[in-house]
Length: 81
Image (cartoon, rainbow, N blue to C red; front, side, top):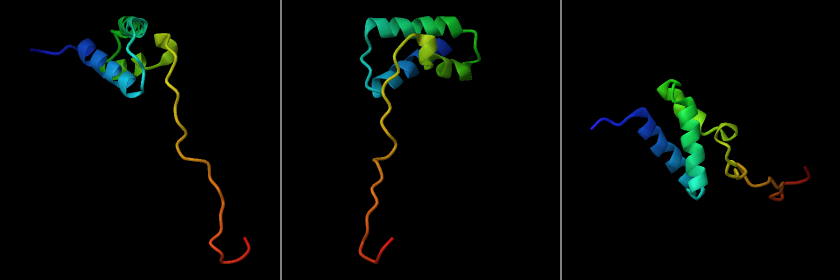
């Protein structure tokens, strides 16, 4: 059975939101579906990116953790620095 671009994209978007720690509430799912409907004419390779843009979907993006912990300068006793 052939999987449509919309089905494939919906699976990817919901999986991404799940991995980002978002609960798939009915409101969130409706926002994703609305965004997909608004952008269904976009090229297949752009549809996923368009559906993840929070301003288009009307959803609050998940918080992004800092890439690294804060840097702390230290010394291993070789002298002044």
